[in-house]
Image (tube, rainbow over all chains, first blue to last red; front, top):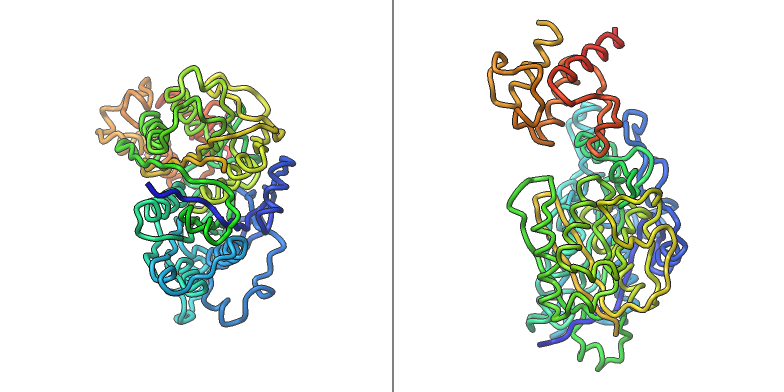
Length: 402
Length: 85
């Protein structure tokens, strides 16, 4: 069986515009959630989010690029540049012919949709910019990454709502493990913090107006974030041969479907994905020290997730650390699994477990060690990353320290 | 149509029942209305009466909108409509 390692990581999200900045914020338990700065925010009842601030696209991209890059594509390219630079990999020849990019994304170019619907419906104009379609399509970011880095193998975008990135990274992992490719660029991104994007979420009545407090008894909903996480996954011998620094090893994954309800999570579906990832990774429950939780801060997710973890781990569940970094960067929807994989890498590589901030009151239905409010030093050999999506689609990744 | 009749009609539609089959003592659970049915009913109520219903599915008991029975929902909507006037 071929081994798969991570040799590069990149991100931009509410906590920082790079991996070092993001990990520093996670170590310090800093909150990136605040007042939304978007058009027509006064017509929203939800006015907070994990928004990326101090980001000026025109300083990074030229005019022609901005005309083609929705914000989710901009985020993706920034993260991909950081990841590929860290990996120090150059895609050419046979490597490039088989290397691709698989990204997760849920909403596509929501800012582009929002702005152009406004143009035709609100402003009554009968003409929109010619690049609306190539800008808003869900695979736009993957397309631009393939072009920028000469990735000529299998490339596509996976859309499974909040599990998109985990499904995408699982796919990239499977392709390398099976021998289809020696290196893949993978991760995901999302940018739906615009009027229409937030308004749509408001309708479900699951959003918090004040904070994201996963696992806390007084939690009152999720908070939307935005951003991207992108990684270079590489076959182990390939990475070693070129002397690349290895950040962590991906050792397994599992996907499952609840086949039950379009929004309510299922303990059985989540448990099957967690147990499946352990089995695929050939590790036992007692080998795992950390789980990066899906941990949305909704009443339903957090208690279901804790019950699923308790089912799979049995008495071992009490020895685990499980934290939700959504409390800091918000729920980055289709990009969230990728941003959260950084917390797993930090746990494995630096021995620092990111906290669940905003934790105020224990909830008997979430009676696990959620690493409340402060990061913790710990030796972590194996970590899992959970993602459970609307649609009842679950994907869990397993990683190991190298 | 009174507020009460309108609310019952909205709930009946969610429950796929005739309004005459709805009793005020029933809970949404009795009527087979799940969490999605509930938020859809609240949306329909907001649209029908042009009101804002304070309801967060994460903390229904703290929402200030009592959904424990058909009767309580009617009472809450009547109060909101009155406050609006």
